[in-house]
Image 1 (cartoon, rainbow, N blue to C red):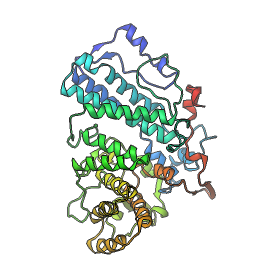
Image 2: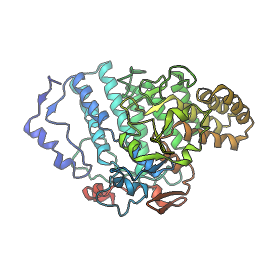
Image 3: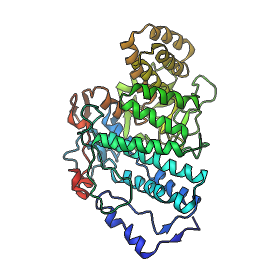
Image 4: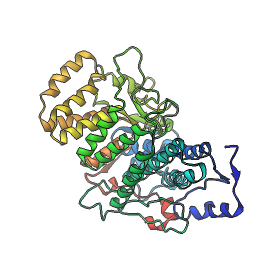
Length: 443
């Protein structure tokens, strides 16, 4: 970055924070103009490093955790735990909103200028492709956090989130429809896939988008939209580039969500951070999903909290435990998509291939017999149960609850029971009040 020259006064005024923050709370790139591929890589890294850590907070809204009020930070998260978005305490922690658009701002800057300033090379193509994919993923996460679950029958009119694809301070940023946001996501996904030329980055650099993570993103998007043929193809194409799983029966293993794991595809997100680890116990509901002796994940994922009977997460609270996409999720998408397209054989194989790496051999043999005898309905429920077990505390559960039936949930806090009713409107999270204050279009 030492080659970057200072912005002129005029350009700095155009990119001033005061104007950007009027609608999206965007921060400017800074007082420098990138001119080389190295400069644009550093610029894009700002977008990666600033990507929101929202999934730790989303876990509070699920049935995965119990808020531990003995911790001093816990009161800041009570409103999330109570699903109280309408009248939260001013001191309550808010889900991030503007930080998504900070990341999008950096992506937009790279897309607009990298080839014009640094030339067209394989390196700049990769950087520009990553920027498109990062922008697609940011809009996808915004949409699934702050909008209704996708419904093809109403998506053309359901309110989504603002779309930001260029640096223009005169735009009046209003939420687009869910259909329009997905159109942009698909356009960016296609543009990114056409440009990225790296299949995998080594551990330590695997926070970046690649050919494989672009396919993993595509598989997840199609899954969320129930487009099963496309989800099946994308998951298979991604697994064809690398299908390794951690064998939890081996002598040397890593947590599957470790950025150095053999199954890591992209490790950008801190999905259950140190604060979440500190203020939460694992819920009895989640603990009850496992055979606590024969399922090797149980002791790897959870540990006792001191001398109490409570369990806490071992999947967070470490810089090494970062995950955005990993192979186990693809096995589960493949299983679900195969089942939904009436390929029971592939659905069963995908599920059992994963479970073989997670269960003791004796227990796996028992489970193999049981699961092989399930009908389509039973196998579908088993796949959903396995998502809950395998992907616990990695940011999937709120989205899964929202997509799969929006069941009733109950949280008990300080002796009071709070209920999220089945199909409760609060499954669609209200935009944070700070964002509404900045942009009244979000009201």
